[in-house]
Length: 141
Image (cartoon, rainbow, N blue to C red):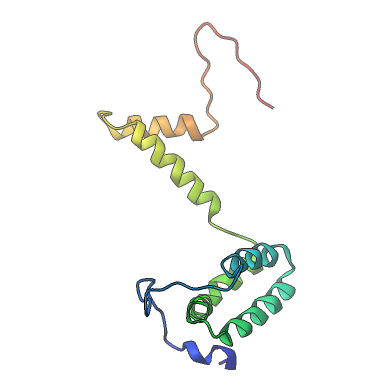
């Protein structure tokens, strides 16, 4: 096991555990994970891995408990993060599609059958474009 990760063995914590309840962060510290995320996803895998490990080592040495808890949470999910970096895949498209389907389902409230909801989703999200009576077909490039 890596020495920098030794402080987090078996520590999957929930977000509700908060010590005193008072939130403190260094100036700009709340933006650091976002900047790191953007930078890591643009680098080649080996460089991104080195940067992530360096950042984790720095956070484990931090005097701020919320930063150390963040580092532990990231270390707990390190395998999944490495897979994301290695394969350049994310679930953003699936989440976007799920949101659109939920909006369609909200519009379809009151339909008498699930087939109507499925048809509406296929029309809105699929490549099917039926020709309407009295209108010319338009080619989409």
